[in-house]
Amino acid sequence: MIIRADRIITGDGKTILENKAIVWEKGKILELGEIGQLKTRHKDHSIKEYPGSTILPGLIDMHVHIGFIWNTQEHSQYNDFMLAYYSLDYAREAFARGVTTMRDVSSSKNLCASMIQAAGKGYIKIPRIIHTDTAICFTGGHAWEHGVEADGPWQVRAAIRDAIKRGAHWIKLMSSHRSDTPEFTQEELEAAVDECRRVNRKIAVHAGTQPSIQMCIDAGFDTIEHGTYMTEDQARQMAAKGIVWVPTIIAYTFIHERIQKSMQEGNTNSVQTSFIEHSKYFESAAHAYRDNFEKLYRTGVKIVTGTDIVYPDREAAPVAEEIKIMVKYGMPLLEAIRAATMYGADTLGMGDRIGEVAPGKEADLIVIEGDPQNDIQALDRIQEVFYGGKSVFKR
Image 1: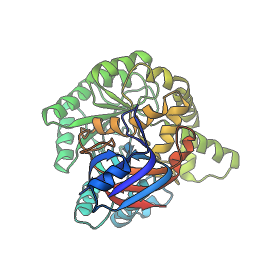
Image 2 (image 1 turned 180 degrees about the horizontal axis):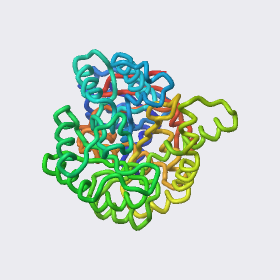
Image 3 (image 1 turned 60 degrees about the vertical axis):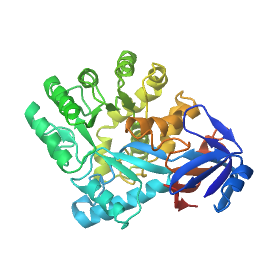
C-alpha cells in the first residue's frame, strides 16, 4: 500500500517530511519518497491520499493497566470473563487513540499473556503488548490487593522468577505510595535489579516520593515510574546512568481535576470518595509536575510517555494528552512526539522494529487531520490507524 499526506513527522524528534508518501509491503515500510516515483516503482500497490493531514508513527504508552478493574464501582462482580471483556474494550479503545504498542505494568495474573496468545491466534485484534504480569510489593504495600507480596531479597527473586514463568517481558516493583516511607529496603531493591540483570529482563519501579526515588536510582532500575518529586540532581543522575523517566503527568493532573470537579458537584460514589481522601496529595503532585517538568527535562534525562489512568470512567491510553501536557510544560512538540514513539521503542528494546517512520520498520502509522505544529489539538483528530500495515481504526 502507498499512503500520502501533507507531512510526515518521522518520530526522531527533528524531522518533518513535506508532501512525501510511504509504501509498505507485508507490514514493513519499504521506502519513503515522492508519490509519483513510488507509483511508478510499485504499480501493483493501492494508493490512499490524506490531503491536509499528518502521518506519525504509532504511539507507545509505556504505563498502562489494561485490566485495572479495582476502581470501578462494580469490581466485585467481575469474574474472569468480565475482566477479559473489560480488557479487550480497553485495548480496542487504545487503537482509536493512535496507540499501537502498550507496556502493561501490572494487571491480573496471566491476563496479558492470554490476550497476546488470543491475538496471535487471530481471535482478537489489539495493540502490541509488552507486560510485567503483576507488580511485586512488600507485605501490605502499595497495590498488595492485586499484586504479589514478597519480603527479603530471596522472596523478591522468587517473585521475579515466578512472573517470568508466567510470561512477563519486564518486571515491576512498587517502592513507594503516597508517603515518604520507602516500601522496600535498599538490599531488596538491589536484589531485584541484580536478578533481572542475571536473567536478561528489564525492570521498572513505582517511585514517586523521597527517599524512594534516590534508592531506586542507586539500585539502577531501567525505568522509574512517576518520579513525582524528583530533583534536578536526581534527573541528572538518571541521565548519566541511562535510567528512563516515565512521569505519567496526565494521571495525576487528570485525577486532581476530577477530584476538584467531584467536590464542587457534591456527586460522589465510594470509589471517588477514596480519591478525595487523598486530594491534597494529588494537588501537590499535579503542581510538582507543572512547576518542575521543564527543569527536569532540561537535565537531559530520557523521558517517555505513560498514562496510568486508573480513575473511574477512565479514558484508555490518552498518550496524546500526555504529549500535550509535556508541550505545555516546556518540551518542544517534536521531542514530545519522540517521547511517545522512538524513545518508547528504544526503551522497550524494539527500536529496530517500531517507533519511527523509516524503511525497515513496522508500518505502525497514524494519520491525523491537520498540523499539530500549528494546532496541537490535531493529535485528537485521528483519521486512520495502521498496525503492521493493516487498518485497525478509521473515523
